[in-house]
Image (cartoon, rainbow, N blue to C red):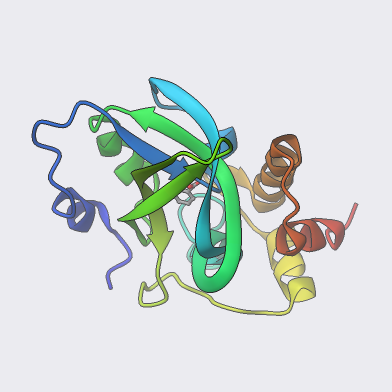
Length: 185
Ligand code: BEZ
C-alpha cells in the first residue's frame, strides 16, 4: 500500500447525513488535540495492542532516518486504552492529512468507562503499508527513537508525551513504558 493514504481514506466511509461520529485516539491524538470536538471521553478498544511498529518519515523522522510511532496490532485479549472524541466528519480532512503516512480509518467498537459502547473510527497503520517497520526489541526501538527527529519535532518527545498522557488516563502500557524507561536521560 502506498505511503500516502489521503486519497484512500477519502473513499473509506460514507458520512452522508452524519452530523457527528466517535473517533478513538490511542497515540498523538490523545495529547495533540488540534481539531475541534463536541465531546471527549476516556474509552478503550478490545483485541488491539498499541505498538511502536510504524515508521515516521514525515513527522518524527526523515526518509533517511525514520522515527517510530504507534499503530495498533490485532491481539485477542488485549485492551487498548485511549481517548474518544465525538467529532464532525469535517475534521477528517485535517486528520487524514496529518496522519497520511500509512494510516487508514477503520470502524471499531469503543467501550466507555461506564460500560456503554458506541461504534467509532480509529486510524491504524497495517503491516502492508510502506512505512511499517514491525517488531523489534524494545531496546532497539528506544535507540531508534532517541536518534530520530523530523518536521514535527524529536521522536523522544512524542514518546514522552504519549507516556505522560497514558499515565494521566491511568493506563498501564508495558510496551510504551518500557521503551520510555530505556531512553537515555
Ligand atoms: C491516534 O492517536 O489515534 C493516532 C495515532 C496515529 C495515527 C493516527 C491517529
